[in-house]
Length: 222
Image 1 (cartoon, helix red, strand yellow):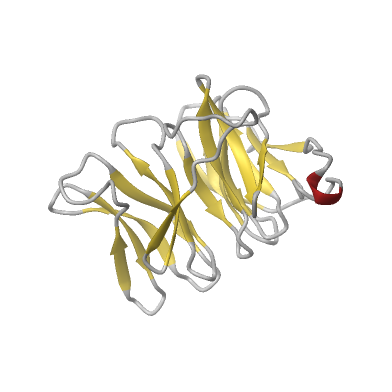
Image 2 (cartoon, rainbow, N blue to C red; image 1 turned 90 degrees about the vertical axis):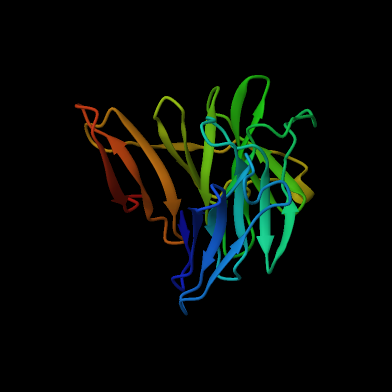
């Protein structure tokens, strides 16, 4: 599900005990499996790792297989989990639908949460949290060290936003709504950006006019 600049990989594996376990596959060919406290062998809760940075900080979420959304986000580092269940702009939310999808090399986080029946994308820098729905049901999939973010609406509209934090006032006194750039593969019915590098290269999938699903890599033209 994710790779860093050194070639370390993260994802999940379904093993003979029927559980799905998160893993970190280091580029030295050493594999580490891990589970959140709620997950493990024969559990209905599965540990899904989504992203990893150069410091081997891993972002992910608990999932119930067959569900359409994650069930609680987390950050893992050297065997220790930290829960990341952001609230919405009013300060209240529930754990269902929340997940960490992206972690940058300098520790920025991105993901989604679920509030009042809709998915909302979020960006987190230290204690500051930003929520940026283009409309209802938006997923934030990745973030880079420049605080650029990407994601998509569930209807298949991909987006990119530059420097989501850089136009704010001192001590975050003024929240500035980011400007969104559409990411759309030419002629596609839907485009889903998933990965973002510090050079703003994007990897993802698109759906063609016949319903076929393909991968793409996009380079910025701005």
